[in-house]
Length: 191
Image 1 (cartoon, rainbow, N blue to C red):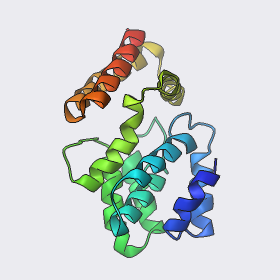
Image 2 (image 1 turned 90 degrees about the horizontal axis):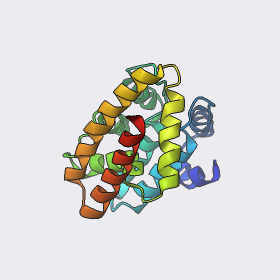
Image 3 (image 1 turned 90 degrees about the vertical axis):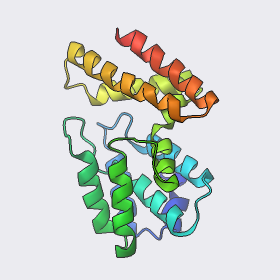
Image 4 (image 1 turned 180 degrees about the vertical axis):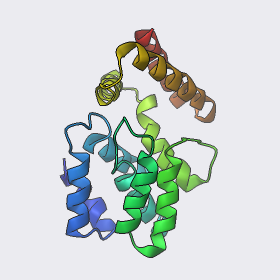
């Protein structure tokens, strides 16, 4: 899975140490969704975006680092990931990359175009037309929250999904329809 990352590492001038860190962290066995596949899918979407120059570089760096720290039992993953990113990216990119990473905590789509690109890439699985990919995502999230008892998980996940269902109002009709289908299906399975 490291091959799709190579062109993005090259594009941002990532050192060998940065490459090793990102791949090692995203490959840990506890990452059932927030690992290499999720980030590869995000990078593919970022690559298709119209952003160029510093915006594109910062989007790639934010994508690589946005889940560099991920533990479902923690509540500071984004802040800690932003702090790690600051130690690895160039000083002129550090603040912008950290802001992008911090935006992934709330997933508010009413924002500037660069931030929205990152957030949409992060959330794109919600409106995937692939039932198989969505099922993989939902199962991966459950596995990452294996420490949470089933009744508590069902309540918490349902609340999150109801909130995320509201994103449909900010999407075009085809993506809104897919998001609604996927989330309604998961909510039915959780009930």
